Picture 1 (tube, rainbow, N blue to C red):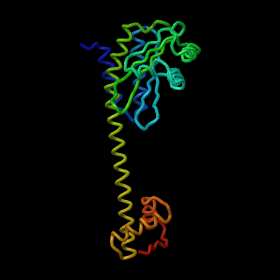
Picture 2: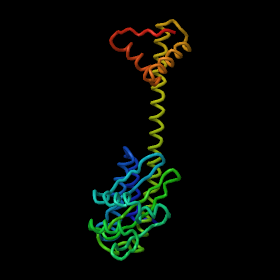
Picture 3: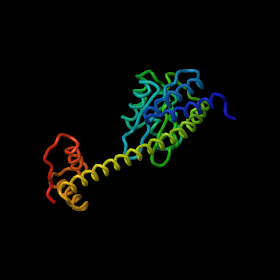
Picture 4: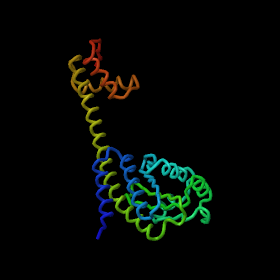
Length: 244
């Protein structure tokens, strides 16, 4: 049975999805909830960052604070660390103490210089077209016990479900935008074709051939040529005669 704290996390993440304007904003809200949940579990200040990678898109990084984003950026720049290993292996990766763990020497040194001495990477299952990982940071050593790692995984499961939904919504909105753009382009071309038909007393096919010929001659996109035809009619009168 879910605890009141767990139900609160679920409800707040659902609210983030419902109010989402873009994925970056959702990720920022999610890391804030993650940091709060782990601070509650460890009784010490925890910062959280998330890295989201989607096919054919640059990585999106968000965090509960500027420190969290900075620390995550160090790992991305170095190309190695608990967060990146967690993504590759699909399991949580712990850096319990920067002074005693022999792995990732450069990352450990920079992490310690910033006043943080332990980190935890939690991978999120978001589907085959994307990967994401939560990166938790603590100033104290030995903060991430097995109990708190289990808590981080629990939050990660909830966050992954919310993120999958957010990504589907964002993808649907992008498809809708692309469709609207395509329809707008088609409408502009159809309007231009009608104008040329009226000016030249030609057929629709002949008018479209004129647009394509002008597009090729001027090395301009067909939509841009059509837009110029429409603008010429809608704006101040000017000579606009195309020979069929």
